[in-house]
Amino acid sequence: MILMNQKSVMAISVAGVALVLLLGGTATTIILFNNGYAQSTKLGEPIFVEKGGDTIKREIGPNTTQYTFTSNGKMNGNIEYSKAGEYISIAKGNNMTFDHGYGVLTTKDGSETANYTFIEVSNGTAYQGASAYSTNSTGKLSTLNNILVIFKGPTNESGNYALKQWPWK
Image (cartoon, rainbow, N blue to C red; front, side, top):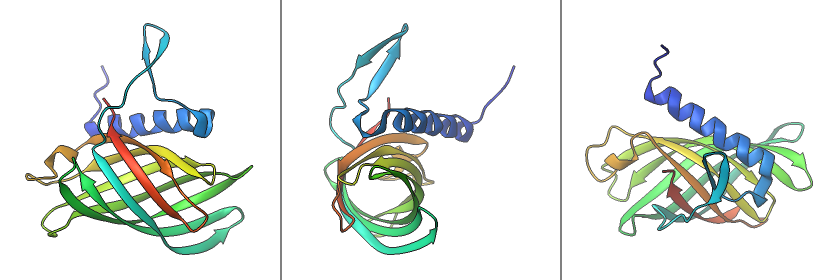
């Protein structure tokens, strides 16, 4: 019998979502696999709503760019936060990119933080992807410990974006 810890399960979940995103591109819809049949599902209310943008862009190799970003938003409609992080973007042609990175979410008052890693695909006008969160918080952000969220939202040529994120259930 193989035992897996929560981080391994989370990594496998993120990898599975990445595979779906890569195979389906930005036209992928969220689906549930139940008894071999794909079914559409409603996402409900987002856990995060945020706006942000890229702050630094640096070419690091052929078709590969490193970015830093910041954003501000609300969790569950009432907990204000900011995010900062970085990601690597790999151009795949036809204006498609595959991005992977990490960041830190901090409550507005600075009392709590959560770390996350993410993967996403973009077609130049929209993003979609998945983030895996972890935190030691026992307060407002405690629900983010070992949670996987999916996200999507529009972007522009300047790197500004607006994202909505939903917990993966």
